[in-house]
Image (cartoon, rainbow, N blue to C red; front, side, top):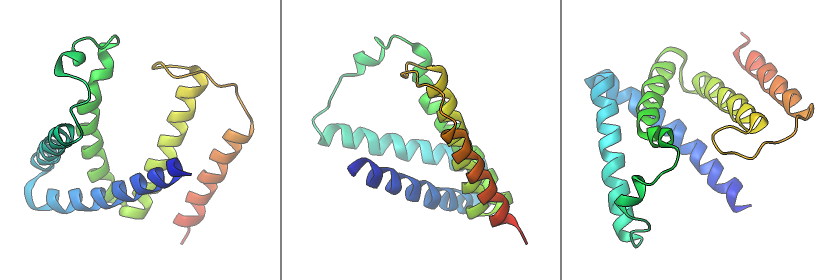
Length: 144
């Protein structure tokens, strides 16, 4: 139950952040906005790391087995850029529908193939059926 609550909060925060970042971008530019977002995220995380007891050490980062896993910050910058551009052109609700649907499709494919260190799950027809229902929902939502 706690996981569902945290996931719901995450989705809400992402939606609000997309709107905020789009507003900042209109007044400053996309890369300045993305830089500010990443800088403030970095400062927040460093502060949280100190406050919560410094779990892990900086040296641990150099011992990561799959070095590509360290590209999370680059992906974060690209996410900021793509969210801002999609909210700008589609509006918050439509952009988030496509973002969430894409997240679910890719996450299921990652699990299905067992890539990036995830546990491989067996194919189940109900999951693509659920994705099809989501796509139908988008069509209904967009319908004028």
